[in-house]
Amino acid sequence: NWLINLFEKSVPIASEYVKLSTGLGLNLNSYQIENNLDLIKTPNGVAEIPNTTVNYDKNKLRVGYVTVPLMLGFSTSKDQEKGVKLAAGIQGGYRIQGNVKRKYEQNGETFKPKYRSDLHMNDFTYSLIGRLALDKICVYAEYSMQSLFEKGKAAQEMYPFAIGIRLVDFN
Picture (cartoon, rainbow, N blue to C red):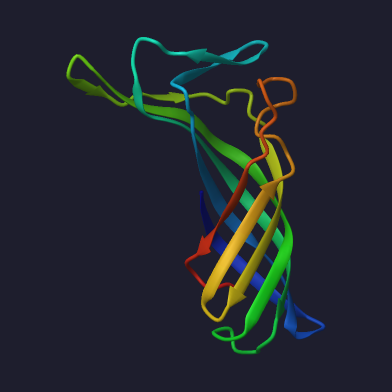
């Protein structure tokens, strides 16, 4: 999961210790497809078909969104380099990318095909998001409240989540 905030703006409310933040970003997700499965879009949904002709070295579903977060943040210090910071909120997103990327060898030759398809993925997503920072170390969490695939179009409902370390400080 790569979350890149292209633009982020924080506005103090009530005091310098409480802020409302929003912005515009990109959320790029990559999901490993296990068990050598091919995901195929059909009129009725996504078919999971085992591929017995090749063994995939890499088999990933990649999804990208343009995102807009809205977070309420609290800080114990006026200095953004110090103290404890906590922020929580929601994030909406619009899907701009969907593809499957594979890598395999056959007869000594390496193949790296990419297939663009929406695979009945939802165009819009909305997530709960949170951040916790101590001085310059920041962790984040995101949980999608929207299934990755349209209702009834996949073998199982999937609600993506991510937990990670943020490399750039937040306000």
